[in-house]
Length: 140
Image (tube, rainbow, N blue to C red; front, side):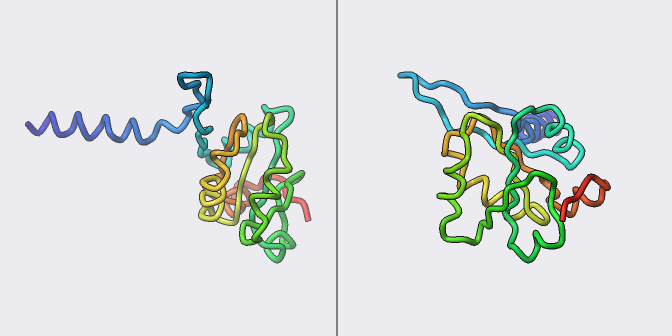
């Protein structure tokens, strides 16, 4: 019985950790919402280097952005009432990369934009803090 518990628990963890699910067609030609892929700072940087036309979105406040940001990031404050309208101006056929200070607001932002039809959404789990800890490039 103890081994059955460990087997079921292991299966649940593996299922929960599988975050690389992509958009899949449903019956009738419709598509489901794009899944958010959560990445460490190293994985986020590698994905940026791999993708030729990614869109990087910083969802922090202007005060936070003034301290530095990931190069080429577009600034779209999640606390703005028109946040979703701003996101809607982006090209849905290009991958969207989202980050905040520590990962909380970017997760919230990804939940808001998940059903908007982007080809792929990548979220920096550790936020800008994790990015700077790795000594990756910062713009000001």
